[in-house]
Structures are given as structure tokens and as C-alpha cells.
Length: 228
Image: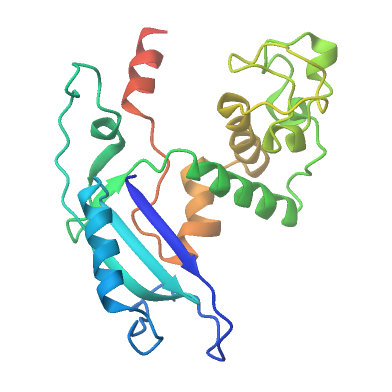
């Protein structure tokens, strides 16, 4: 687990908190909240021993516990196969903490950006995908492709397989499909006339102070594109 995040909500009188774009992130004392410090220490040790690079516990938005561990993963695992985390570690930030590919967490970011784009009037969830990406964006027959909307992409009901080939009519079957889901981000890019990194920074990561968050081409995807 490269990064674990636990959001702790308790019915206390202290207000919810969201960290500012600049400045320190407020913290709370776990002992004053009634946490068992010995158990908390035991939990942090367990997380670190199981190859985590970072662990954060939030109490109503404030940091209750936070710890990081330096990982230096080998390129290959014991069996000689590729070690996924080696390729998902994309460097370090100014404080030496790892910058990591967050895998499918990015789907939540994409969904938020689609929502922001809709709020700005740039697109609608029920827009046909072809309205933004043009005809032939998938490998489905033209008639079936025309019925696929952005809503189908973000709800995993596009009816396509992982190669964007037709499986079933849109909206009739749920199928976890990263390839189709990613086209939702492309729709936002077309509708906003901005690069994904540009609108993500302008709308989301910039205001939130997420200085090291960006879209990047994965190493194995870069090699595929080069050979294509």
C-alpha cells in the first residue's frame, strides 16, 4: 500500500477543518482525544513494516497522526518480474517525500474535474462522448458509440471492453474499465480547451495547495506510444 489515508469522523463539538492552500496544516493531540497512544504506535509500526511509504490519520480534517518511510524498491521482484512500485515512484518533492502514481485514486480526481466542468457549463454528464472527442473515439459500431455518454464513462457502464470494443449496449452492464473512464478526462480537456495539467491546477490542485500533484505519462505507456 504506497499511501494510506484514513478519515476519522467523531461526533465532537470541534468544527470541521479544511487546510489552507498556503501555511501549516493544523494538527490535534491524539491523547487529548482519548486515543490509546500505545495502540497508535503499534499501528504505525505495522503500517511501516508492510512497505507503506506514508500514512495519515485525520480527525475532522486535522492531522492526528502522520508518518513517512523511505522506500527504495528494486526494479524487479524476487521472481524476476517487474516491481510495480518501482515504476510508480516518480521522484521526490522538496522535503524528500516520494511523489507517487496514485493509481485508481485518479478516477476520483477525474470525476471531480468532470463535475467542475459541468458546473462551469462546459459540458453535461449526458453529453454523448462523441460530441467532445468526435466520431470514432472507440472501436464500437457508430450507432452504439453514439449512445455512450460521459455519464456512462464515469459510472463504468459504457458497454465497452478494455480495448474500447463493443460488448453490450451502453447503460446495460457495469464493467470496471479504466481505458473508457480515462476518456472522461479527455472530454474535459476538449470542452475546456486546456491541457489536463492546466485545468487541474487552475480548478483543483492550485487552490488546494497540492504543489506536487500532476498528470504524467506512465513509463510503460510512454514505451507503448513510442512503438505505436
